[in-house]
Length: 362
Image (tube, rainbow, N blue to C red; front, side):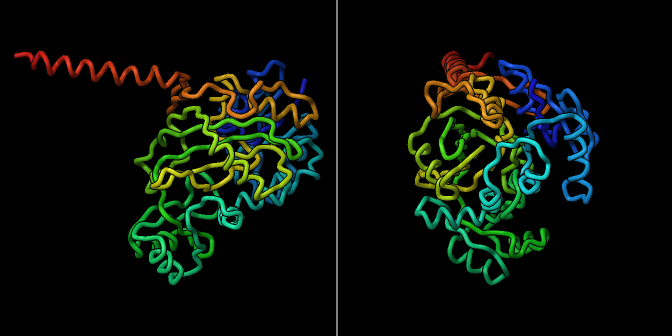
């Protein structure tokens, strides 16, 4: 039985990975580690261990000790803040991984570095500039205003993001994060986003699937409206996005390996613009694809072991378009077709029409 170690095991991203492997056609023994003693208790793993935070000097020693003690054979990380450290340590840990090369991870973990690659390749991106000082912020408003989008160049879940049309608000926001030199300003795009999640092996595209996000859960509780928590996602198939996402990946790495999740946001003309690549990890709700019939974590792990994975006949967008994954806090997600969801809209409109026709009861 293959022995898999997953970090940040109590978090939702890792849980979706664990559930996917438990849904695979072969058994896995899964070892979970987490730096938070409370979230660790939620881990759906066969073993679980508390470890120090990634910036603790003893992180490597403790992780290495657990690898040896448990006989873990393959390591996977689902959190961006651990990705760079795990990538740097991969050869010292003496455990299988299926990561992109470290230079690629370094670029993708820096949103401004990614933007520069895509801009040089003439791919659609929102106009963006690095903000070193208040003068740069003034220039950004002149170039991209009246409203601009500011965000940290590193981090996930909309970290540090804020749309604003006020210079003083933007200045105070960057001051709050001590972010001068670590923030960018860009054109504001529309709210519609799409993700193209893919697995590559030594330069070959193995499988990919598009997913459109219909809304962010708890969006009204974040200044940017972006929480990193997908409310409902729906499977999509868009040849333009398929082509653009591949070009975006190859502009950064001409021999991609591992997981590349390309995020795009639509502009006012309806054109998807590249915003970032989530590198070396699946998007949080990837069990959605597993439940719909595409177990990407299983494919990824099989490749990491040097084995031939089971693949769908159609490698790009093999899932039926219009399948929705509806989720929320403390609720089991629901897989349902968009046609079924829309049928409730239709029923409501018919009911309202009937009420209007008959008039309000006296």
